[in-house]
Length: 530
Image (cartoon, rainbow, N blue to C red; front, side):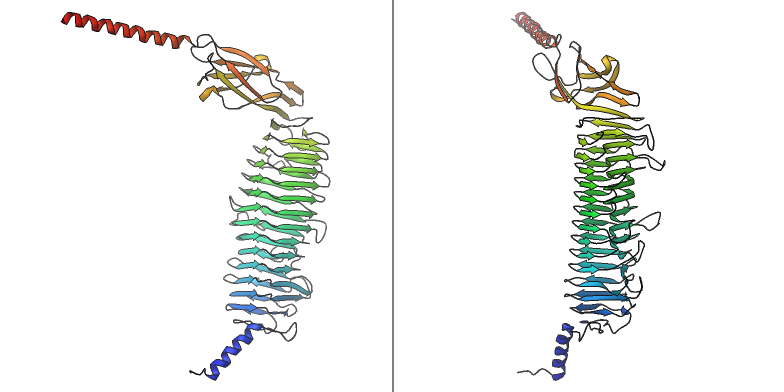
């Protein structure tokens, strides 16, 4: 048998003992499996360092400076002691990375708040772990957990942090499946004053933000997105509950997806506050229980244009369900579509415009305590709202115009019941005096669905469009002139008569005559040849 040298055996035992990382008492410097061990004071990571199951305090007012890779795993528990705010922090520099996983945690120790932040070119990756008691400032880098590089946080708990996660300028990453509680702000994506941004992509999905109430009265917010470039940010399937600030605040951004989120119990504030945001999608969200003066469930402010809101459910909104407003005079929400969904039990008004743009409300059910659909001259006048196939009982419109409309479908037949493709259908409202639309029938004689106006509501009152007269024509048929009242969706059938069968009979007769001439001519030729 080959004997193992004593020196090699000693080395093997040393590795096993080192992997246990047992401290004699909390606060003592600790050894990691390999790499830069902590010996007291500021801990500088200059080579890849793996710490499995270590625990203890970083010295008072000392820091962790990470220039290489630091892995804290296996239930590691590190506390940062500080005699004053920002005196202790974890700093990840360009090329450095912090991996916190395996039920490990970094906490505020004794004294004031500490912070964790990554500079441009850094990586912070937190998985199934905990960060508590960090941050006491609204601005980089002392917000709590902040990054100007890559920040990934998954299935973790962030508690008693000023801002649960703060992405800025060049930041990117995934924030998914986390529980964020007792924070001043849940999550922020901000450029910190930069006029342009390379931020993203950032995915915020499947998180719970609860009790966003820490700190003073001002500035508390659930999720904030600022200056997001096109297609770089998505907010999906999150729950934001019990805040003393906006559930979601978005500004100066393009093509942001906000889908299937729940925002509830929003105290003294609003649900979704959307300012200067373009070409974004807000789909299948539930927003409820906003309170406070001039609070709303959804607010579009200034140049918020070309956005789609679909299948959102708004409940118990004070004072507005949806508010479109030119608040600063710099622009008005325009060409926004609100489709399907419901606005229910709004304390004051359901859907309100105070802007100069043109916007659309389609297939929505509204039930407000005061006006279901209204306009306000509090900020500006001259806006237009088209309301199509939406259910409500009352509306008001000082200094703006509202058109109430319904779907209009028609099919054109001939006297034999066949559809007439190519037939032209034109609609004239107000007793045949106001042209509305025209359409050409397609296959089966069916026209594309049109929008028919029931009435126009403006500062001068309600102007009914009354009877809609239809003019239907097609070559070879008598022109149809008749119509219908429009106060609900319409689907009508129109039959053209008169000349419709004549061309068909004449063409058959002409063929028979031609054949007869041809037969007679052939017989004559044969007779001459006999």
